[in-house]
Length: 214
Ligand SMILES: *[C@@H]1O[C@H](CO)[C@@H](O)[C@H](O)[C@H]1NC(C)=O
Ligand SMILES: *[C@@H]1O[C@H](CO)[C@@H](O)[C@H](O)[C@H]1NC(C)=O
Image (cartoon, rainbow, N blue to C red; front, top):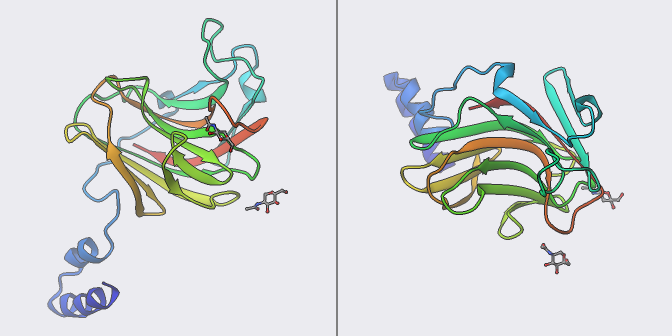
């Protein structure tokens, strides 16, 4: 592949088709997508209801840091869900078409049993996609392995949801890592941060995010 790309590069450079070459040789998950302009209004924060935001969230130099403890309260006094500190992308709920989330994530060593990114909504169940970190590895819910060895490093995460085609695809650092059927259309939106899994969770959970695009 590499060789044929180099060959094409020379060939296409010679005939001046540089842009075509980009498409052929450096396919990127964002190719063909148009980024939606985001403002802070698109970033709604969910955090334990009884704790001020600044005790679970920081936003500095473009980096959002979100953390939560296993014994924290849910985001709402009437909710029986697990503790979370999460960005909920707001104003861009979707129910059809093809949508993409991009963000650079960082999970410190020690955080385990935490959902760091998700697609909320589905026709069956509450979520379409849950990406959890267990012991440094990323899993689809608590099952399929998506990527390994992610502690203490920035990784680029791209999630493509083809609602019409019923598929979700996950890319790490530009490389396709996982693809699965979705769970049917619904009121869909992206989230990232930390949301405790039902079991096998570390006491402290944190993830950081920057350069989020939809
Ligand atoms: C994470 O921390 C544990 C305990 O300090 C250590 O044994 C392990 O090597 C660390 N893992 C990474 C990827 O740094
Ligand atoms: C929790 O971890 C144990 C031991 O590794 C494993 O057997 C169990 O299936 C895990 N539970 C869940 C819900 O992931």
